[in-house]
Image (cartoon, rainbow, N blue to C red):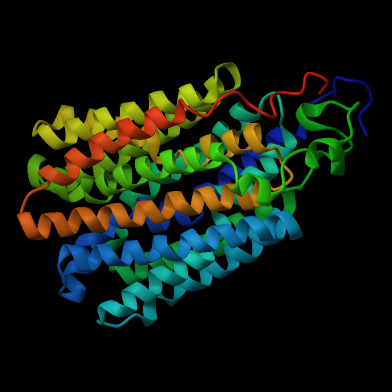
Length: 416
C-alpha cells in the first residue's frame, strides 16, 4: 500500500486506461461498426440484395445492441465490469468464428449481426467507462478520452485490414480471423491487468490515499431518480439526434466517396480519416472536459459534425469530402467519453452502469435507424439530398440541446 496524499511511481489507474484502450481496439465497435462499410459491397454481391436490405443488418445489430448495453450496464453495476467484459469477449470471438456457417440467405446475415451485437455489447465503452470513472475523479475526462484512443486506433486500422482480408480471403474468413484475434489478445490482457477499483491497490481515485473509495462509489442518484430527470432526457435526446445523423453518414461514406472520388481506395482513405478524427478527438475532448464545461464541449463537437455532414452533402472534391469525414468522426465516438463524463457529473456513480447503458443504447439504436432511413430515402428518390439535409439540421439541434443541461450536480471533489 502507498502512503501519503501523493503516491510514488506510476498511478495504476493509467494501466487501467491502457488496458481499456486495448480492449476497445479489439472489441465489437471496430469490427462490427467501423468496418461495416468495407463489408457492404461483398454483402450486396454475395446475398444479391440492395443497399437498404444490407443496411437492415446494421439496423438489426444496433437494435439488439441498444437493449444489450442497457442489460450490460446493469450487470456491470451488480457483478463487476471485469467479469462482464471477459464473458462478452469470449462470446464475441466465438460468434465471429461462426461466420463460416453463414449461407447465402440474407436473413442469416441479420442473425449474425444480431448475435455480434448481443455478444459485443460487453466489449464496448460502457463497462470500461465504469471502471475508468471509478479510478479517476479530477482527471476523469482525460482518462476517458485516452481510453477512447483504443477505439480510434481500431477505427483506423481495422477497416483497411478488413478490406484486404475480404479481397484476398473473402468476408467469412475475414470475420473468422478477427474472431481469433479477439480470443487470443484482449481476453488475457483484461484478465491479468483490469482491476475494478483503486481499493484493490490501496489508493483512491487519481491516486490519493486519504479518501475511502466507497465514499465516491456510493455517491450518486438511483436509477429511478435518473429516469425521472429532465436533464437525463435532454442529454439522451441530444445523443440520439447526433447518432442518427452521424451513423447515417458514416455507413454510406465509403460508397458515396467511392462513387465521387475514384473507387475503394478513396473510400478506405476516408474511413481511415474518420478513424483518425476519432483517435485525435477523443484525447483532445477528454482534456477539454476536465477544464471546461462539458455540455459546451459536446455542443461544439456536434455542431462541427453538422458542418462535416454539410461538406459531404454538397461537395464532390476529395479534400472537402475528407475534411467532412474528419469533422463527422469527431462525434463518432461520443458514446464513450462524453456520455460517460456527463452521466458521472450529473448523476454520480451509484447507478452509473445502467444510466450509461441506457444512454449508450439509445445512441446505438438511433445509429441503426439513421442509415436505414437514409437508404429508404435514396431508394425512393435516387438522391441523398433530403437525408443529408435532415442530418445537418439534427446535428445542430443536438448541439443546442446539450447547452440546456444546467450546472453539474456531482462536480470534481476537491478533497480527492
